Length: 187
Image 1 (cartoon, rainbow, N blue to C red):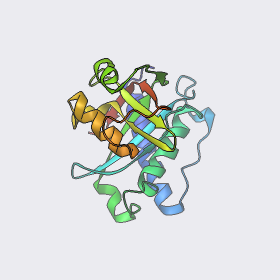
Image 2: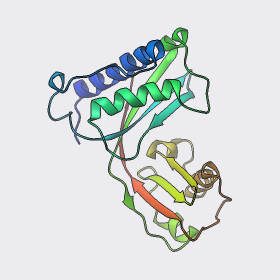
Image 3: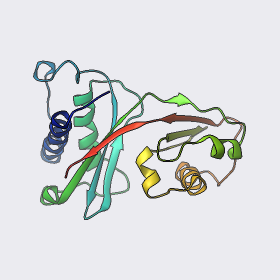
Image 4: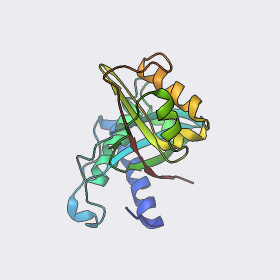
């Protein structure tokens, strides 16, 4: 998917408006398909990340594309503000202090690996987002997490910990998927 600067600004503005609407009402801002170009009104999976003074303040989204891109951005923005279990809900006075970034995901694809070492050797740093599933354990890291964890071992250890698994343990029912992302943020 190609987005020009105007599309990115429009989606970032939508995320901000929906977040403000959500803080006030608990719901994403209502949207109409006819207000959006057909090129954007297609199913896409997104994550919206909120930061305050450079520190994470909320991040929510979905891996699977189930609704049109603008709707997914609107929903993810509200969830990042109100439903990230790591943080208290965003208050109205915080809104001007928050910076918004959006990640539009490519469809996930299986990443076959026989063991932890094979996975480490096949993952593409700074390109791959990973989704780990094993029984009740599930976690994902967006490709931009490589900025904080640039080494494959550190990235994978942190992903395993996020999923509630011991590092390098390879459950029998493990499933690894990779995906890419188009990332853009407010200036």
